[in-house]
Image (cartoon, rainbow, N blue to C red; front, side):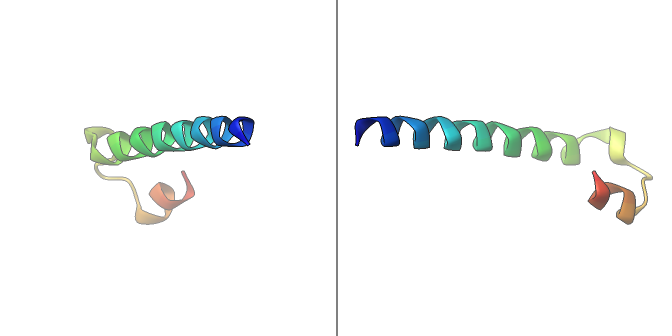
Length: 42
């Protein structure tokens, strides 16, 4: 079972990092003025 726990930890670590990247992008000035639909498509 240790392998499963290790894989889960790696999965959640990668998912957490991707989420942080999305939040940083949404918080950046680069999205100012973009249409809502364009932001959603990204």
